[in-house]
Image (cartoon, rainbow, N blue to C red; front, side, top):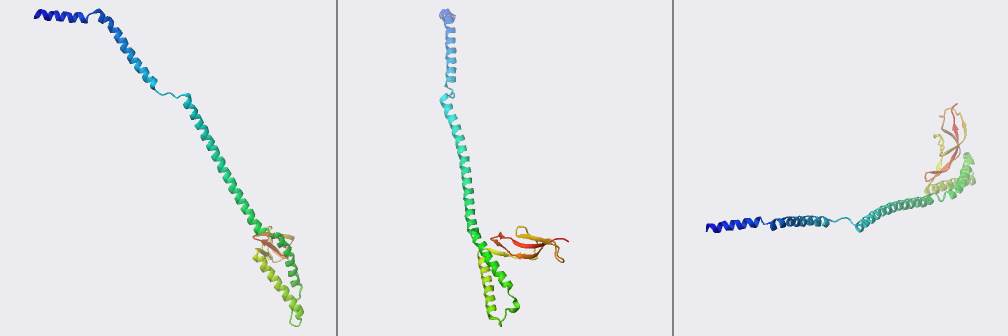
Amino acid sequence: MASWCVRAVRQSYSLVASPALIRASPKLLCTATQQKSGQGSEEEADKPEPSTGEKVPLEEKTQLEEQLKDMTEKYKRALADTENLRTRNQRMVEDAKLYGIQGFCKDLLEVADILEKATESVPKEEVTSQNPHLKNLYDGLVMTEVQIQKVFTKHGLVKLNPDGQKFDPYEHEALFHAPIEGKEPGTVAIVTKVGYKLHGRTLRPALVGVVKAP
């Protein structure tokens, strides 16, 4: 029994120390190393890298975004220009409605001036029942003048009689300057012809004489 155990130990030692096994072991190690390194290279190869086909869509996307931004800005500017044009046209239409009659009004102002001069030229002391023809004529002129002023007011035409007011170069036209005692310099002393405004715009300035400092 003891001799069999000794022989078994010697055989196992000789097997471990066998040159063939020793020569084969480096090969096994190299094979294992190659397998390990091959596995690592395969893992690195599996990592995705951006290809040329993927870069092209990114560039196209950037270009399209820039084009969209540019078109959006142009669209906004076009909308703003259209709105400004619409507002300007609407204002022009409204002005045409308001001031389209100013030429006709200027012609009527001459008629109003004649009526005013006619009523002023009639001596008031002679307008009595003893002189019915003159009285009727005078009353008719006064009624006509009153009626034409009502028509003017209805259409936005307002009379300007700035007697005693501060001189305004936008509404008055100074024919002369003269020192007048008892009146403040820079005020209207005499109105030779009344003015008119159409919807707040001076249609005809009043012709006046202005007080100047002595």
